[in-house]
Length: 488
Image (tube, rainbow, N blue to C red):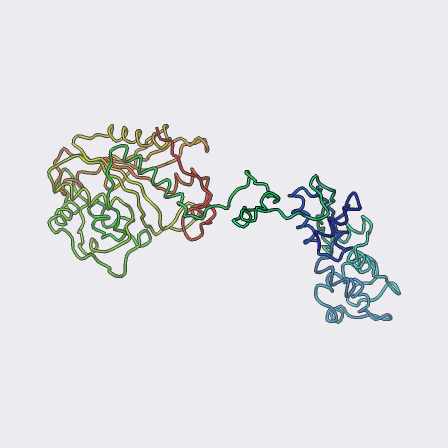
């Protein structure tokens, strides 16, 4: 119907000046007319130009006053023609919003005398607001001052009407030709393909997006980091133990049992199973001894070490617990230098905000060899971070229970134009390594950083909850680009 009306009208006229008027004349819905115009324009049967008009329509409040009258007139009519009425009685006769607005507007118009008793100051009034609202509702023009007055009272709002003016196009015909989209077997058998008009092929048309899985940004950055470690000759450690004992997570790292990190406010302890089943007893005895009375040149912490504390199960607070197990196993073999790395989840009882989660990822690397020094650590760190595109590094002395010396790592952020902390590092203490059984000249250098922080910088994410967790926008996962770190 709409297509016949448009093409038929143009057969005898040069132009359809207003698609809205055409729709009204033929009893058609304007949206149907618009859809047909877009289709005909695409096939060049017609040329269409946009039309935009600003109309005023009533708000819900405006519709109510157009039907019932303005609040000021409702209030005026609620006052007895002669005499007065108390304010409380008047308020009971009207809706709260009508009473409030009516008092304001009627007083402004000097229609009533407001006090404890309310009375009329004029014998009668005209409801100009209602009349104006009815005119707007009927599509009539009203003055600019009236528009501004109704708009200020939020009784009308602007509505943009969109339509088209239409002329004949280069392919105009009174009736649309049916074009073939496929050459079928029947066409060939009937030999009527020579008379068929085929639809033009649009080589610029985009096909539907392929439905496929998408890698999370963290996985992309994680893979790039793995590649860097592998290029540097590192071997990945198994990190499948999310649940760890306090012994491997703290005690074997020469972290005292009264350390604040071992409090429930910082660590998630398990209710069931609450304790570990077994530990290497000979090694446990050596760790206990170095905690209580020292050894290997150390005085220890000089306290009563408790086995029940070491047995407690927890969600690991760092992947260094994995490093501890790997080093213990390495020390039981004929010594060979090793380079290990891990990237996996850790858990801490943090207050969740835009930069902290209770669950996040830790990147850790370590080198075990004879005669390593602080210079070797700095050299490896410069090599590692330069492959991430971070060539400007600074190191600041720090304290860790299981490394000495220890250093915080800072890099100059070109975007923020300042130095930002990117990780921590150090050399594992003799009190940690020698009870494992390593020779005295063996040293272990190590460093760690988070996975989320570099990923947030790379993808321009300023809230960690938009990157990791149940609030992540899935469209971010679909549209994010491939991560390429600044690998040298």
